[in-house]
Length: 114
Length: 111
Image 1 (spheres, chains in turn brown, purple):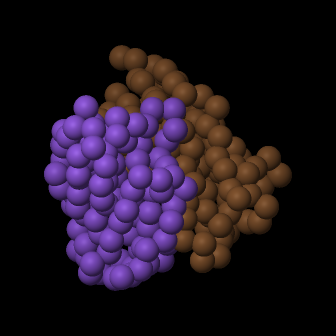
Image 2: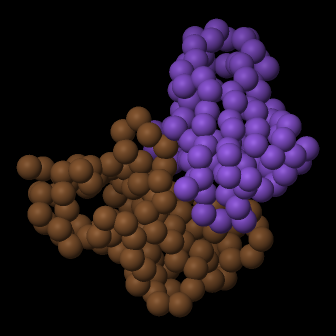
Image 3: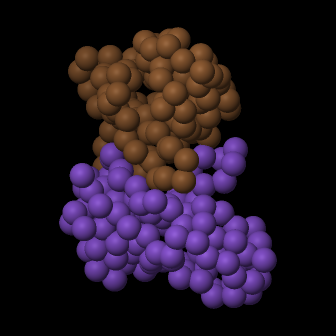
């Protein structure tokens, strides 16, 4: 069975500062990994995904994430945050065969200070 | 981009009441999912389907039924609603079962 841990329930950073949101997964094989973002009163939107190849994947709005297999991690990064990045971010993992399900972490609520 | 719509957007019912949540997707995706979202738990999978007439049990199915009537439509049924089912419900669709596209959610309150 797969699982995801997002150790930080809330993160606050100043506008213009860099950001890292942490994600650790548990899965015995090679996973498919995702980051989703949820803005207030909206559904989840896919931010980026990793299936294979280059372990650093680029997403929308300047976000990127790095798959580190030895550490079972898939942390999300952004070089300079904007107030509009305030949202809840979910990391998710799936098996890389037709298992049809993805497992979500509990989410990290990001607040940007002006 | 996949279009997933949900209705109603908000619903209030009483304990023991009957509730049906509706989801429609218009991109001909094979897979459709129902999740509930509660603070501290992220999203938890209730039921899912990989085609019309198919139903698969998710991780938290107790108290819920679901039915996939067409490629586009997936319904979640609460036949005897309880206060523990007060939650934010999301529907999602996926072409292959990996990346998923979400609807806007339905907020259900059971009094």
